[in-house]
Amino acid sequence: MMEITKLDGTDERLYPLVGPLVMNPKVLKQNNNYPFRTSESYTWYIAREEKRVVGFVPLEQKKNGYVINNYYIEGKAAPVLEALLKQIAEDTAGSLPLYAIALLDDADVFEGQAFVVEKKWTRYVRMRKD
Picture 1: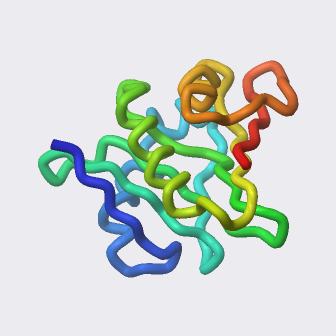
Picture 2: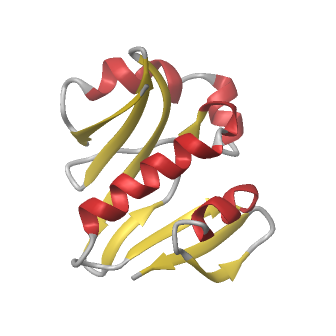
Picture 3: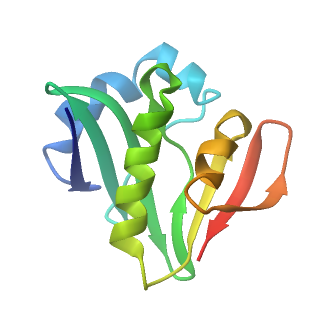
């Protein structure tokens, strides 16, 4: 059974959970070698199965909305991404808009969670959920 943990971007429990992944060359390659960042303005949503991290989404709060700018899903498992997006949508509902810069390959999963395409690039798509 999957469990989703929500941690502030500077929570001391964050690093032991995601540190081995965010430094892993295979994970970075899946993220097109874009580094993962965190600060006080981030909330991390971490999916675990039997205490093993199977995905995470760092969510940044900005003045004009919440932004998903990168994420990791083991094996690109759509159900894991869907569960994380549902939790994020539930937590941000009724407040600021939710934006995502998603991998083009994952656009259908985001669209399934009521995100709408705003712009497409070669590898990414900018999406919005009101």
